[in-house]
Image (cartoon, rainbow, N blue to C red; front, side, top):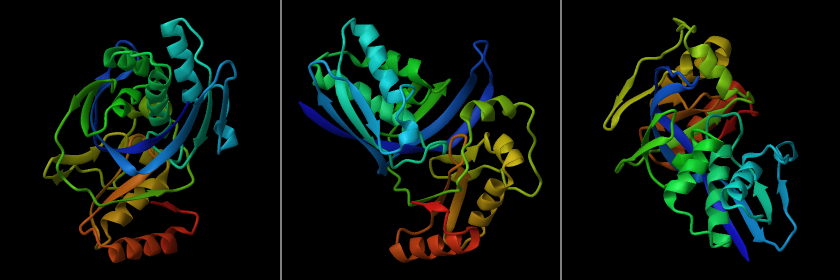
Length: 274
C-alpha cells in the first residue's frame, strides 16, 4: 500500500514572545499560515517487516530526522511495529524558519495513521505531535491559526486574505533554540526596522528579529532593503529565520520577476528565492 503526501511550509505573520515559562520554553502568541505552493513530498510504502528512510538531502537522512522520530513515537503509543519505506524529497530549506521538518513530521503521523488503519483520534495525534516539536501540531490542520502556549495551543481562524508572498533566504542556518535563548538579552539595532506593520488582519511583527538581526547583520539589511522596494507592502522574518518574506502589493508575474532579479543582482545568485 502506497501513499504520497505534500508537507507545506509556513510563515509567521506575527510572532510575539510573552516571557519565559517555568518549563524552560517561551510563552508565544503567533499567527501562522501555510504556504501551499512550497512543500516537501513524502512517499510512504507499507511493508511487512522492512523499514527504511531516505532523503534527497543525505545530511537529513539520519535516524534523528523528525520523520523517523514520529514513527517511533507512534510505535510507542500503539505498542506495535509500524514498518514503512519512506522517501522524503526535500524542497523546503532547513534552518530557515519555514517549518519544513515539523511539516514532514505531521505528514508522517497522518500517513501512518491512514496506512495502518490506526484510527487514532485527533487528540492523540496532537499529543504525539506536541512531543515532536512546538510547530508540529499546526501542520495537522490546513489553515491559518493563532498558536499559543509554546506553540501547541491552536485557535484556527478564517483567513480570507490572499497573500502575494516572495520568500528570500541567504545560505545561513539559524538554530531555533539559540534564537530563543538570546531573546531576553538582545537589543534592537538602530539601523534596522522592527516596528509592527499594520495589516487588515492585525500586525506583521516578529520578536525574534531582535536577537537574529543583532548577530546576522545581513538579515536586518535584507529586511530594510525589501521595505525600500516599490513592489513591497510589508516584510519580516519568519520564525527564527533565516528566511524573510515580502508581502507584495500586486500579484502580477512581472512585479515578482522584477523584484527577484533585483534581489539577486543586489545579493548574488546564491540567494534562494521562492
